[in-house]
Amino acid sequence: MIDDVRIDCAMCAMLNRSINRFIEIDGAMDISMHTSSIIDARIQLIAERIREATRLTIMTGAGVSAASGVPTFRGQDGLWRQYRAEDLATPDAFARNPRLVWEWYDWRRQLIAGCRPNAAHDVIARWSKRHGTAVITQNVDDLHLAAGTQGLIRLHGSIWELACWGRCPQGATPWRDDRVPLDQPRCPLCGQLARPAVVWFGESLRREDVEAATSATACDVFLTVGTSAIVYPAAGLVHEARRHGAFTAEINLEATPASSAVDVAIQGSAEEILPAIHRLL
Ligand code: OAD
Image (cartoon, rainbow, N blue to C red; front, top):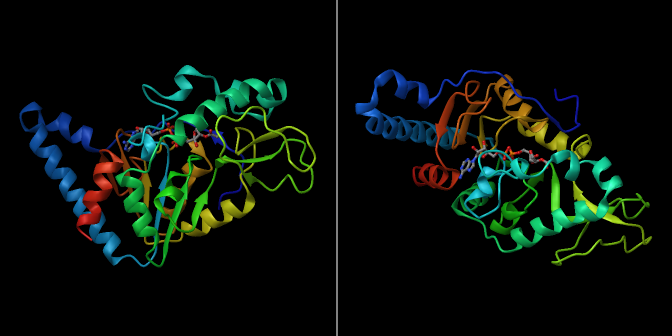
């Protein structure tokens, strides 16, 4: 069970037991052959498991939107390399300097407004229409929705939605406002400052989202795609799925703390690997 629904970062010190290790053992000569045949075999295995599955759950992170041009948070060009989360993505930061926080969100909104779903979003959208499929995302860009994903569980909210910072009764329910640029918007109901309706560090996820995500871990196949797997409670879902007996797989450009826990880890891009799996279904 996932008890603590507050968002949190926890680095697990797990060993990477995926393709890299294979490559080290086998030596340089056979690297490309082994890598591609191992990846092909893993793609086939995942496709087989999806074909047989009654319940499929996919959980995504920022890596799924990278090919669309949305910056990730971690990694070489990640947002948290240039900005401090404590200054921009916490309730304290907003209380201290709402203008600065809104400037950052407005910049991201403008950037995302020019982005379109990529092949990874498209495949996930198609799968979401199959009965028994659940899609959980940590992304706030709504590109899954733009691709047509059904029944999406948005664990960290949406950058396109606002809520009343003063928590006035009606303004506590997020409303959509996709105007760009947006200069320090106010709650239309009470006139107090509005905030981005995203989950900040130290805040709780919406109870309904956590419940929906937790119940989606009772599945036959659980795919974790394009997430660094270090922000909880989202990062705990793959382990929960394993406890339920699901076949678990990860698709990511690099090894993560989840890589050694899943049944199959593929180091590759979501926009290439997901369509490759889809072609075999
Ligand atoms: P991260 O930026 O932490 O991780 C993105 C992951 O995607 C990395 O592990 C990359 O290796 C991988 N990646 C990059 N491009 C990829 C591609 N084309 N295909 C596959 N994988 C790729 O993003 P999240 O795990 O989503 O929270 O971050 C989780 C949360 O931390 C976010 O929701 C956000 C952040 O702080 C808040 O803002 C509250």
